[in-house]
Image (tube, rainbow, N blue to C red; front, side, top):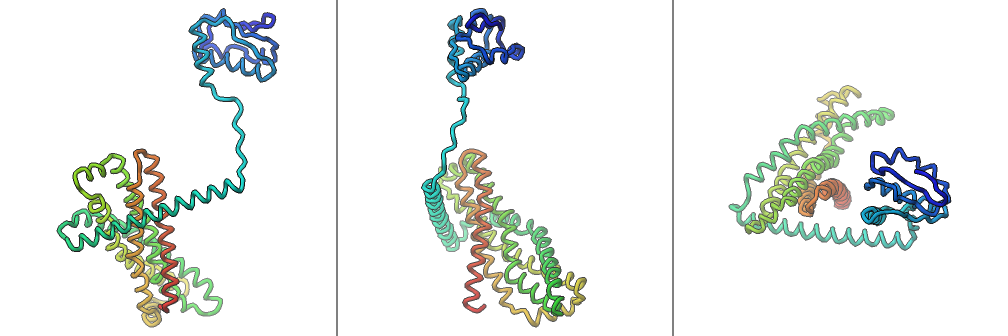
Length: 362
């Protein structure tokens, strides 16, 4: 590269293997009005890009150099590269106004209402299908339902039992630290039994099942949707709700109460052991206090919630699976949404149940 009057002359080969050896910064302050490439023997995409970057740099500095001496092929290559080069200046970030925020909130609200209506319609379709299958039990997919009962129930017992055991331990430990100040250590039994039987046992079990089984439902049905297996079912005259959704939902409805009972037992065992070690409340005293001061309705309240939690998890997991499009990004996004939405609705339902039972005095 040489400077010749008002022109920058480039020569030799301007290809990807040689452009780094050219001292482009030497002409950064040049006042040249032309870039002569007539002596360039070979020019590839990288060389053309370097020439155009040099031209753009000089133009931004106040000069407007033209490219001269190019052959027809070189001219075509330069034009193609120039048409596809990004702009140097990043677009200014538009200022977000109050109207923009209100518009975004409105769009989010409309999407949320639309999704709520769609999920409600899907719930109605599933309930209607279950009602039809109750009247026609021969059409129930028993093998699929028992398979899913094993997957969502038996396979989840270890993690549910361990979780509930640790929750009982934590409740007893924290309760002991507070009740010891008032000499009311024995009331830790009431704290543990009511908290686990009425709320924490079934609630935390439902949260674990939502993260474990609800996401699995979305992933399995979504994968079938991506492979167009669900479309093939409809083509064959088979109802995907009957074959895919109902067995999974019924398996959850049957197995979540069972998991809730296991969680209650494990939580009470964990609380009893920690009460024994931390407060000296023997298992015998714990059992007597539990039997005399714990109403059976505390257990009943938790079990009443279980089928409703199971229905929420099953419906959300299967619905989001049905919404998967033909790409992996959609599958991952909706699987995450399924877990978040299931847990949110389970906690919301638990709060509504708590208010209801408080109003009726249970």
